[in-house]
Image (tube, rainbow, N blue to C red; front, side, top):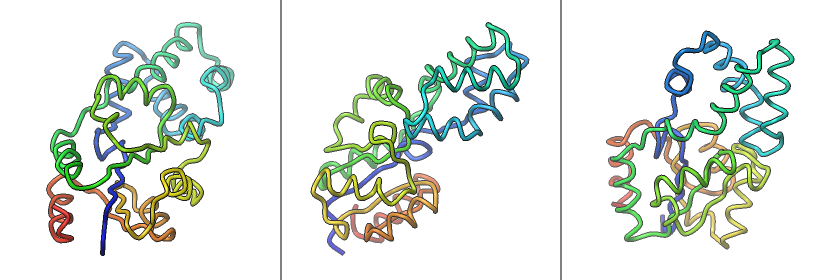
Length: 203
């Protein structure tokens, strides 16, 4: 296996993503925390925001109408969508692996993520901008595990699938990548990732 390109997911690979923690931190005094979890973060609306196929304003309008929310609760929804990235915790050990691999391989990012929230995250953590390329779902109106998003990455950066290794925390996303000929590692934790990379003699 001749790998020349390493592709990283973002959520729960480079940054921990915990919606309950996000809600508690951003709306600490709200009595609507469980509703925000169910109606926003765990809903199809969040997936559509990631895909870039719905506007934030429409999500707030739909949830507000369904649950008869007040002006204050609408503002809380807006605050959660705009600022959730500031409550993502960098996984330092994975960032270290990212930077080690960068010395030997081209590095790409393939993530289901909203825009412009990803841009804000990259301003907070500039190492994300050091990647050789990135495909962010909301920018291309496609999301993993849709086969088209992998084809988009390969065609945009003229990559050979068999020379690529994808690291993602979801088995479905890795399975979809493998169907395109891309090698994959299902991320569980930093030590497991390091061990897998060493077994493949990539580190």
